Amino acid sequence: MTETQKTAVIFGVANKRSIAWAIAQKLQQAGWRLAITYQNERLAQEAKGLIEDLPGAKGFMCDVSHDDQIAKLFEELKAKYGTLQGVVHSVAFAPAAELSGEFLNTTREGFRIAHDVSVYSLIAVARAAAPLITQGGGIVTMTYYGAEKVVPKYNVMGVAKAALEASVRYLASDLGAQNIRVNAISAGPIKTLAARGISGLGEMLKSHAERAPLKRNVDPGEVGATAAFLLSEAGSGITGETIYVDCGYNIMGF
Image (cartoon, rainbow, N blue to C red; front, side, top):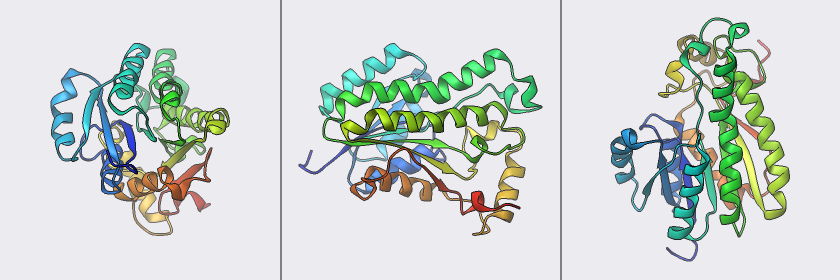
């Protein structure tokens, strides 16, 4: 590692259409050394193919819904890298049945799963990462406009994203004294593997492109570039924020 090279761990690289993949590419281009996590052995092979396309990147298995796996991962990261300067949390999940019909019919278990995987995992990962971020750094997570306005069919994920954005602010307050910044990027709808589970995705994309000031949908690379900015020295004064990368959609009333 060069004297100025930084290391980041990235959660959520599922395939080449995932936002986390776009972020990984931008960070790699900016000279970062990357640790890429995959959820389980079943996904290891696909992850290996992605990691091979990122020179110098290494793969690690970690299911963020298990505290013991998070602890093991950060022990491995400490042994291999010593310190970290960046964390990318691009993880969200709710059972498919919760992403259709009415929010009123959200089940107790569906609510629990959505918040455990999509929200609590950020807290758990931040807590485990903080001791390794010894010289300051950044944590970035992914949110969506459904956190603050009703998006039909987004349902419990909208409530989970609202909790995620609140968690970003509380974590930013807790970790600021250690010079660790915590921010969220609110991206416009993107055809990712996770987004395909939302029954109204096609309508979301069409409406977004029609109403956004830039008259188009956002590109994953634009989200990746924003994450790279937030984790760089250029973003050193930004923490606790939700940064919109949505072609301006969120500013419009109608």
